[in-house]
Image (cartoon, rainbow, N blue to C red; front, side, top):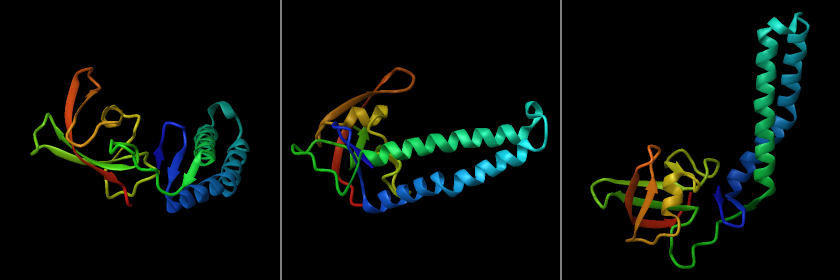
Length: 166
């Protein structure tokens, strides 16, 4: 999944199909299952001290949150490849190789996208993460700076940026 500035989410067909199937399951059979768990726990008696009931209600809340997330994501989704950056700059949907503090022996390669987009064979950083937002817009050979969680700044050099082919 790749997000662009116009709030469009680009998904591969495979990712779209997987997310659509998850949404259909959570909206149908999973809702029925959790409702049955809640009903069974409710029949056990006093709800104030009923751990099974509270656990089922918490599970239901998490499930409904995921349904809302998937619904919003799929409403803004376009299937296909994100358009390449016209000027060759790092953009969401690219595999980026960086060197920390300009040291070409200390490198990292990652996909700049959201977790739903990538397979498990490549590390993924969100475009909204400190590193992701720090490298967006920079070209190969340029230095980029981002803020670490402790408030300090870190510098990386963009070594390579190419579209993710999955």
